[in-house]
Image 1 (spheres, rainbow, N blue to C red):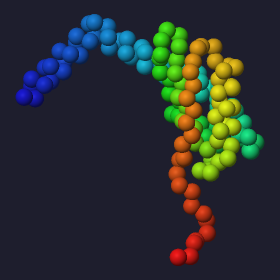
Image 2: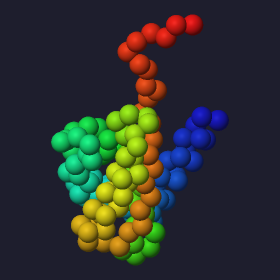
Image 3: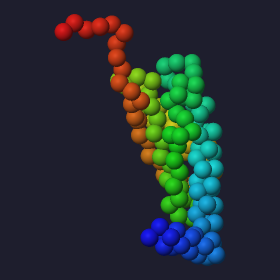
Image 4: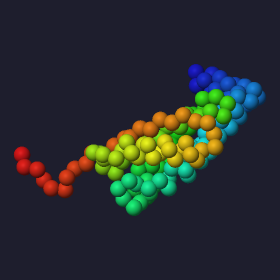
Length: 131
């Protein structure tokens, strides 16, 4: 059974290679990664509304938090999952708006944007509560 499975896998791989489908998927993935890096380069220099640091320096945005999907020819969906520095950040909405405006002003390609704020971890106060 293992021999049949590996033969089928090998056959499918060869068919994809000869048809060019595998190469197209690799090129599309590479293109989306390049677009994601382009987006990240634009947003990483945005300053935090409360602190003198950038969103990159505060780890609010990272390369991994940016995803780009192709919607059509020269049209892309950008998904940014940013993490405010504290779970109860009152300026998360403002950060999302800053991201949107910066991308609208700086990106050369047509895009739609989705901002999602995520909490990295649960915050625990440094003091102990009595039970």
